[in-house]
Length: 168
Image: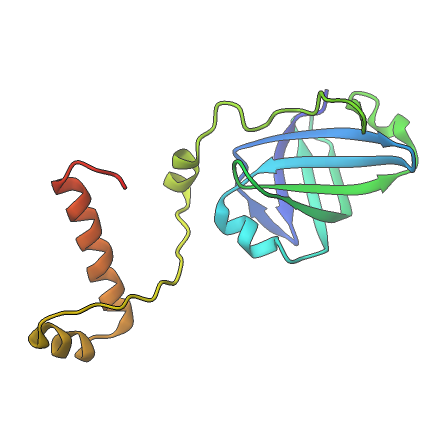
């Protein structure tokens, strides 16, 4: 069975936590499918794209380069499903063939946690807070750059978690 060693999307190396590459057989033909567990940052970067240039390096040294369609999968760990139609299945003789009616799709989430993924790459989200603070703190906050205020809040939350022995 083909094993993925590395993936590039539009020329950029993508860190993958786990993957599965297989042939999906459906009534309309065959597709080469690549399921990859990636960081939330990678999902956010590519989720609105329809077609991507994907380079897949296999463990045995083969290189597959193709325009692939993207399907973001919701729920569970952050992952991308990349696929493209293929006409000659014999080029992929050592790949698992999965029928669209099968329930035996490769489980690439097993043994990986969101915490492990976030240790590698933590996503940042914008948040708006409404606070009631003493006037001296409000005046001080107004003089600060937003980047510095974000750092103060982030450190305060981590300190609070540590002090109260909580993660969230």
